[in-house]
Length: 226
Figure 1 (cartoon, helix red, strand yellow):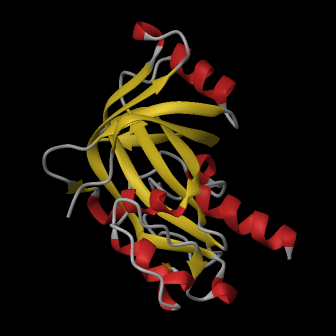
Figure 2 (cartoon, rainbow, N blue to C red):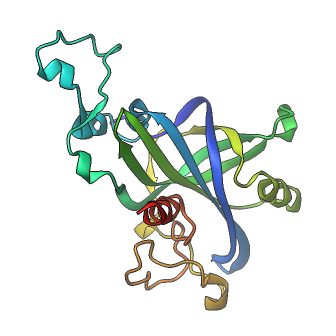
């Protein structure tokens, strides 16, 4: 199966930026968690898993006898279960390390923000009638490339449209247990709760568990609209 990545420059929304201190070995380091979201035609789900689109959508016209178009041109606008429009997880809290992440700061070249050993995953998605879908995911990083200047620029770009590339490693390695190193202090980790309001992680410092993750934002939005 093809790895999740964006080889071409891709437009997303930087929904939220979170920071926390974590223990990396015996060293206290700064970590950042970027929650990103895309919205568009349901073919954006192919980046997560090519099976998702046909699992959730179909063509009513084809079902009524219209000739099927070639896969490259095929449109699937109709939900198979219209009453099941909700946020769904894919891969639970799985995060894979070794990604190269680059965020275009608008000036190109050295102004771009680059992380050479980031973790990516924790996918959520929402299917809507008419062939539209949303896809949320998280990129996490801790290391020497997270400078004070990068921290300031990331905060400045929060809730804005950003353009990114995300290149997968040749071999995907699951972050152990889907978690980052333990948090240095429980008080620094108050915002790292289980996304669905259940039991928190018993090791602390969940690499993917920020309360304002892409998934939680989807859930909050859906609740507000109800």
